Length: 430
Image 1: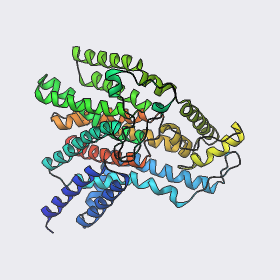
Image 2: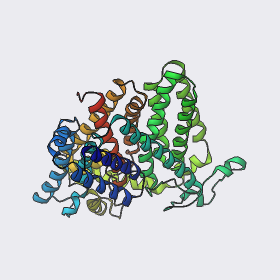
Image 3: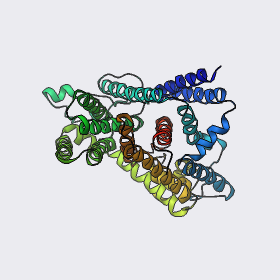
Image 4: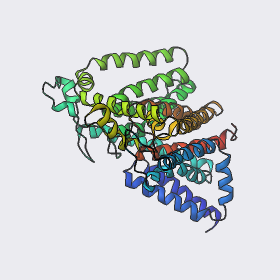
């Protein structure tokens, strides 16, 4: 195959994977496998060049650091005979299975690097408009149960107030989950394209005012906002409005900034008085109790093993010992339900430093893409991804979305496009 033919094939692979990140888990994994196979087959003889480009990216150092920290935590937990309230973690090779999510963005970055400017723009646009389609799907799922439907629990509680008239008509009965199959994962996945739509609205408004293009972007932003509400995730209800405020502060100036902030505050005030909000926040006390239990267990792991942690992803298993010895009862066995607590408890300060380092670098690269670029698409992507990382971590205060396999595919795509946009349009400068 000729060099132009190989590059066209890689363009097709980039389009394919941009579709897969919104699909079911199996589709995401198949797309990643095809992408890896395409890079290995079509870049034969050019691995050295691609690897040098990977190593020169600002993302390389923190990713390597985080990866070593994650793997070392398992080695240390196994070799040291670590015991938490008398319980030892079960360390197996299977614990390393998510490490590839740290490596895959570099493969996708190498694929993106082979695309011409026009083709790369098409890939970004496809990713964005598929995000819009996913938002529409989520809104429909709120009313129509299809693809692994998750029923809203509070609609079946005694004393449920469905409202009357229009409010009753608007009430759905199912979580919006997209193809992720879980409302919290879905909220994290659509958070990135949602933030890009908000950023595009800001960039377009400052250039064109209330034009037709601005109106179209406002419409897409509203779709994302509604889909986020339809997830019926309590933390997502907080994260998205705060993301809007961030875009208003950074992307708008003068009166429009304060109008948007005022509008979002007014919406939140009205929404918080609705029966749906009150029931969702107050009806299910079990989730609050579970979070308190699992946070307590992980804080104790941090207290006892602050430097290297208890072993990557081993906190769920070890939480049983905490519940038995401290609470004297059974408790909620899960990850830490907080990105920071989970990283610290399992990989210690070593891993937490890598986690913060990587996220800070990605936010800085995204901001540089916004600040140093005058192209509408890339400027919108830069600001949008800054806000997207903000939204992701806000959602991650009550849920570990960072290591969620479905979310990691979206994170991988976003990381790769940030790396390539930074290399191409910011000169790769730190």
